[in-house]
Length: 132
Length: 290
Image (cartoon, rainbow over all chains, first blue to last red; front, side, top):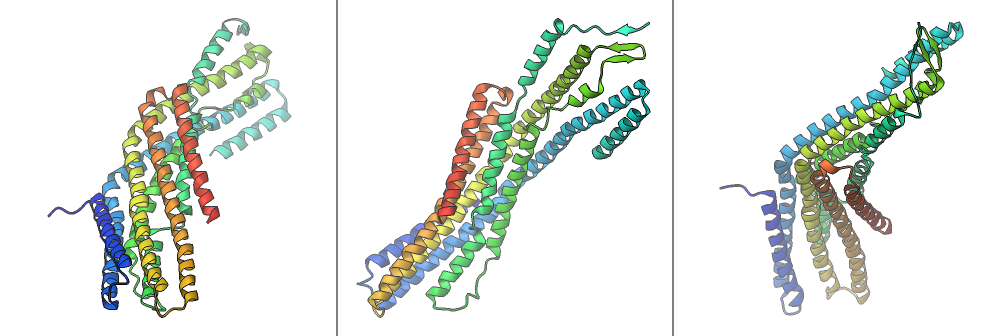
């Protein structure tokens, strides 16, 4: 026999919930006419049906995993790929910062100013360190 | 002999820069990022639900102990409910990770770069055989920045489109599954608990041995507890409605993936984001009034 799907289990749970509601309503409506023993019997039946429904809802929620397993694996892979793309794009900024520092150093070397060269070299080293 | 790089800022450069700027404006995906951020905010409200399968199991156990007049609730078998919570949490986390990645990839941080440092470093002057004038240095800097943005922007646009295309089917499936678990299954358990509560208090209110005061007190207690459950049911429904809106928003993104930058697409997506934000506000109001 084929096993039930999550959706079928929830439908079944709702059917039990509906039956429980009917039993409960009957008891509330005829409470005065029922003996104490009959009332207890209806009440027990009512609670049993509610417990069945409750358990079926839980089973269905657990079974959902079987339905979404592939989708979860796919979304995990896509999210990882997106993070790689994001990192690649953020690396562009790092590359620009390094290039900027390198150009500054180049300009300082052309200016033949020793202090400017030292400052520019320090700046390049710092940018490099921050990026790595 | 010195080489002079001729750049007339008033000439063809203007046209080229204008074209580049136009291209840049075509890859603004901020509306996609905003939608993804809103989606993450909506999914985060799952942690604030304050109701779970395990909680429902504990509550059911508690009310059954009350019915049987037992002080201790020793027979709580909530292992299956704990598993149901794990399943629901895993689905929610998977979706949160996706929307977070989409938000970052389509956001401002990518495809727009700071090149102001160039204008400081690339100064006018003679550099060996090359002489650069001040307007030329400025123009070079601007152009370098714009070209970088265009290349990165197109790469970003292409990637976002590609991911939305691949992700739509699993995203729809996961959002539906999450809404199903919250609205139908957890909501169903809440209905069962409401029915148990009604049954318990019905007997207390009709207990012929109880005094009038005790019966009245039982009815008061019932209304207070029933109201709490009603609010929880409303929170679950608002959360599930938010998930439905996220699914519609993502479907729209998928359908319009080739025209993501069009004003119509932006408008629709903004509308979905606004609706989801309204639902998040409604959820928070329910939580705060509770």
